[in-house]
Image (cartoon, one colour):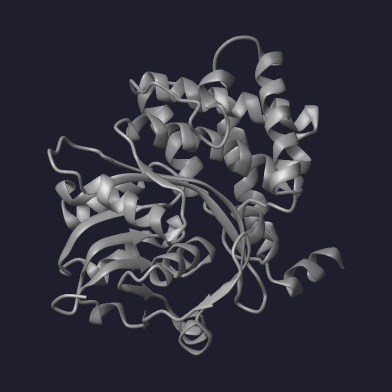
Length: 335
């Protein structure tokens, strides 16, 4: 740590933020985790506790007051998308050399650029996940890849340095030249997975190995692929799902690709559940407007019809609102 600044600051101490912060700290990197309220107190008292793919407890410095943040060489944003603007506001004047978001959706890089300047923003995506358990520990379920890349032309190797530090800590990470393509591909994959997850309320392996739900997922991914194509994006198979393959050729072949992925997931991560489903069942807000809503609005502005995505955007919004409605109101309606 130099001049009060950590090498890495992790904004958000949910499952993914805890996994990243804990691994970096355990590898000897100087880390500060920005957390709030009960979660900050929990980490201060008990550290980051992991089970699953890794099993250990790691103490980390925790900052509960974001206005006291002294900056960092690298800021990694891991909050939920609906809290991004509020979480970033107190950090606006902090000295940060580079910032990247591992959030879902496509709004994130623009939000970071508006606060820290576009030259400091890197693209990133994480196919790394876990589940926050009731006791505050984290079940680490997937460690496939975390990709980092420059959004604007640079001649130095900062993306490689950041990815190298993450990889050395135990998070499978690498630097890539085509981060725009990969972020869009990740979003197309995530949109299908998220929608089917919260509407079926099943584990990922369960709905990915069911032909009917796999077909719906394929059609959602293909709609997002149409939007990506309109935006000049070439999709990739280097995502959670083989998005480029799903978006080309016959639907039956695309469904088979999803079913095969589901079979692999049954073996590698049979208990994996999407974070949106975890939030739904815990009566926490779901990431909807900044993810699905953003894509629907972008489609409208570009004249790209997205009938399936638009319908599911409304449905998932309704599911979210109904799930979080106070119990006494539900009972009143039923009576």
